[in-house]
Amino acid sequence: MEELVVAELKIPELETLIEEVRGLRADIRELLQRSLPPESLWDVKTMARYHRVSEDTVMRWVREGRIKSSRSGSKLRFEPRAKPD
Image (tube, rainbow, N blue to C red; front, side):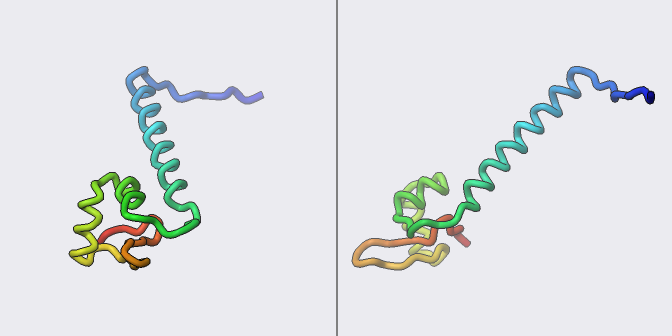
């Protein structure tokens, strides 16, 4: 029977690897959330929450033509997860 050899890592190296894995897991969770299929158009408030900015910032992006939007009456609507240019 062959002997299994396990690489020896010191505690600080293990802690670094554990933190890297945690970071990668968080990145994967975020990517999965962003890749979900859209259900409906978003309003300004939802868009601001998704991008973690204020509603005023979203409105500025619209005025500057940095993000595509459509109007439904007086309300702006956005494709879910749209990114500003």
